[in-house]
Length: 472
Image (cartoon, rainbow, N blue to C red):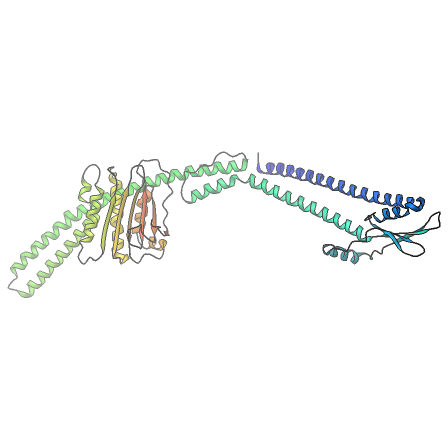
């Protein structure tokens, strides 16, 4: 069923139901008006009966008849008055007219604006008894009574129309909301796509247009999921190629440039011994030897950053905790170092795969380099926590100056972007936090959660943002 037909059918059913309710209400209102008319006619009939009985009543029944006329009460649209024709004394009368209520005064003003004011009309006649007594009967019309009934009728009709409109609107709102209820699923799925979670799927829907949209979104999600999987695989291959390239560059620097520098230092040392008696030349040669030593030390440092740790050349799993301890210790032992480096490693006996272990090592290496270059920190905490069947949680926190904008930090260099790409390649999630976990220095914290490779996990693509960590 298409959306137009469904909405039209529901609107028709709702309209008929509302009309039925209005007809029932109108029938009840008509019954009330008929009852009121019957009561009014009955009062007038009673008045005529009592007046006729007054003419034929005996002397002893006269007071009783007058008392009965006094108890007539309020008549509909008229006011009754019985008085002695000779003395003018009022013997009996119906209840006097009503005082206009505040809510009806605008209606009366409107009537006077478009029509002349209604003047009460009087009708009077004499009743003569056989004993010579004469009574004057006066009936006075009450325009306000008619106006009040008209006002009540208008209020009733308006109320019925208002109620009908409200019920109709509420029913149409329910029908439209119920018809578009599947849109909530569609919006939730689109929101998942925006978070790059392409595992969400929409079920088959009864409305044709919605079912077409659901099919298109499911097809799009499948294509995006496949493209993301291929991109992750490509990213892992690129990371492997980078490691191979690092190894090759390290080998060439060590074999070629390292040997050349060693030979140069040996030649410089030889010349230093031969030029001891030539001070000017000896000084130049000594400076060359020192320059060679510094270049050689710089190359050693570069080889340490580019090359794989010695434990990475082993077969099987890599002892990541030993690698991280060695890395953190190397930063502690650097000359002129005043930053406090700490490492917390907590994981079970399950070994981390080699490629993932090297990725964690490179991430830590890059993060510590960024801290040393930009953070101006006095304390750094490196944390690695793993559990079987759960995520691997990695973090590097410092008490430095932090960053003003995550996007700007990602664009200014390749360090953070590289860490984010490595985490994403393994289906993980990277966040920048304003504070570290409990026990970590308060400052910038990189936090990554990576699932165990090969496990069926449905994770959102990596997001990176600045938010506070609530320490427990």
